[in-house]
Image (cartoon, rainbow over all chains, first blue to last red; front, top):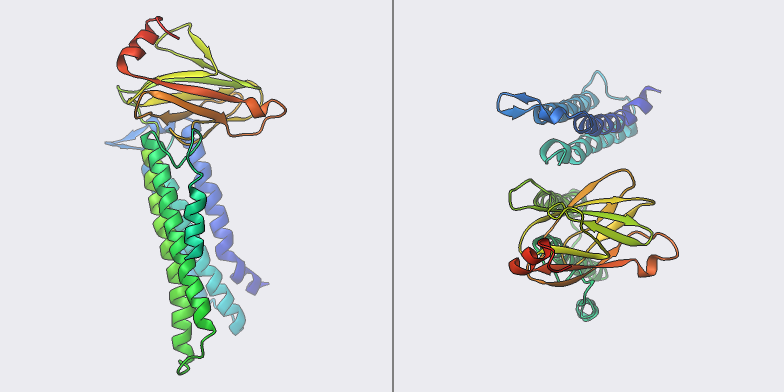
Length: 107
Length: 222
């Protein structure tokens, strides 16, 4: 069971992060939050960038754990697969959420 | 090589009033440039892969060690090469996407487009009360925001030589920025199948020079 979790954890985090950040994007535009300013900066940009960096940070922590002696699997096969899915989750998070964090919103 | 010629030969048919490869506005030009870039890139990659396949039939002079094989075929060609291509496409796509967005500007003119099976009705806030059926009038050389909606099912506004497409959704307004370089007539279509009358579900975009546009707004033409 723990091995299954090791293999699936990073893709699951990507799934949650993807839904959350694009959902946040929808809430910002749907509720007019883009009009709120923090200094010279509009509120949505720091919110979206913070959520993006948080998602990447969580994936990096998970990947680190999959390489650590404390959390890694005793099975060589599971170690290999879980690290591969860990890297996949990290790259997918960076890649698929980049547009939400960096491009124009609510246009 | 024959594939390249075949592709270029086939592309010879990509002219005409509905051709995205014959752009007549900045948005369509950006999209066409991306398409040409992707075509050239795809042909280069295909040629490279074909070369690798040919090389696979040749007996190597000496067998490389396994670590080197993994580095060359799995890491470099299997991961780094496709990721680099996809990254370049992602960045280029995002840059073009930003350029196509309808940003507010004093230069911009707005026209409302309402689709219903199977005709388009265009309204002009600059000339209240005027509506045109299946003919869209815009000024040439100026950005125009088309506010697109539908009264029944989902349609799609598309003038291939001038800009990309945008869905017409019932109860919702989508905005598409278009611009025609020069005065002229351009063909438009709905790019979403909508039933038995779809075959004739088109419209004409007429781009006017400044004098003709002023005349149109003044009600002298139209």
